[in-house]
Length: 182
Image 1 (cartoon, rainbow, N blue to C red):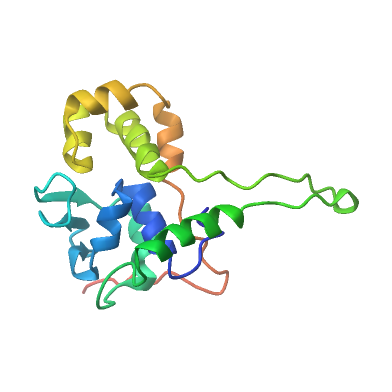
Image 2 (cartoon, rainbow, N blue to C red; image 1 turned 90 degrees about the vertical axis):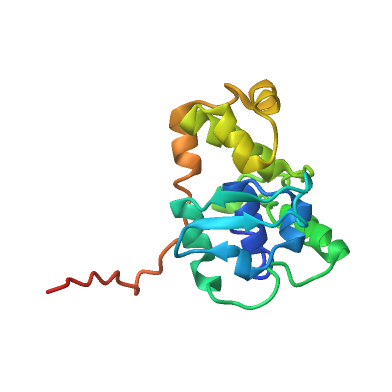
């Protein structure tokens, strides 16, 4: 999905998958709510479904996905409500792989989009990663009982570790610079 997403939709998709925000919350999210330096996203009370403010940590991989968008003004999703759902469907459709037997490519059907599916995946992987239903509930804006009932033991911790290791590819001509203070 991340590879298929348009540049405009990619931040929304990454935030859903790696921070667990609801689609409606992402539609109301501004770049001012995303603090990459402090590594958290603030969901304002008026933007949250539960009408209470919450702070969601930004995982290392999410920070990597959002870095190219840092310091942008305005909303994270610049389009309207209908365009948000169209972007979801277009992204899912773009995951289809056409079969090409001559090249040894096996065809694959496109991903079937599930409403808030990335958020549900996040909750499953996050619970497997940290094993704390209360903390996951706080990050997702749910109760610990809901998190425990719906997301417990759906994935193993080693698989969760792989989920939170998904990062954008760094082009071969980009080098990481490490500054040493004297």
